[in-house]
Image 1 (cartoon, one colour):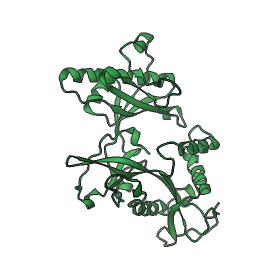
Image 2: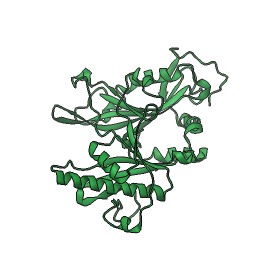
Image 3: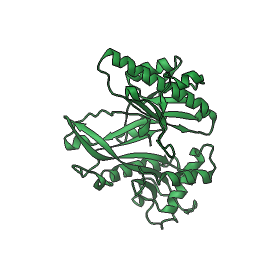
Image 4: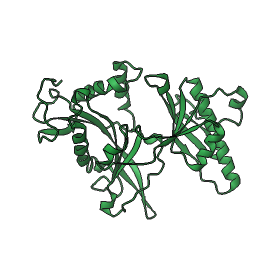
Length: 333
């Protein structure tokens, strides 16, 4: 790979370019960010995990792109990687004046600048170049109207709210509730006080979560194991329920949500994770949280995992303001 002895260009040099990484450069970028992000995994386990994830339905067949900021004059696989990131093309719903369209958007993640290259403005240059590229990148994958330009893109900032806002990605709601793990007795687990674990009729379980089918209430979740016990989390990815039309229905939905959250707390205990986390809950879900765990605490994040959205729909007559619906953990990238 590229030598560190190569003269590094200024960030504003016309010889710097953001390009699609070669397979070898993708692995090099993973090794670089793995020193900070691999958690309890070995480096080889971390690389194997990333290779496994890129074969999943959402990102395989080119839906995810690894980008590297490089000196365009140097040969691929022989040039230093000044900064790197990934983008995931996603189908999204856009609602405007009663009409709903399916559009192609992009989620930006794995933004990383090697420590030896920091303080030179490379990350800023990369984000500026990426913004230009994503305007039209993979828009041919879209259906329906097939907009010539991406109407919006999202990212989740771990460096606060200011840096990305300066480049067009503005922060949105970034709160979550934390619930402690809990051991629940067998009677509660087998009774109506707990949601039913989602299981397939046969074969391996691919979707993790629980449901109260009689109330049409569902939650999905996953577990993340970090470098320290405090970093191990059960994340509620998505909460789904039908809006109640009466006080009695509302009470039933709240109780069902609380039952599933109790199940999540039990899962957290069984899997030895530090806490359960649920992002940006609705008022109804908040009621359920406080039933499931009286000590649940709301946290307003100011630095980590800040959902940010860059909106360009105003250029195409969709208005200047946009609401981000279902801004939950499942969208994180």
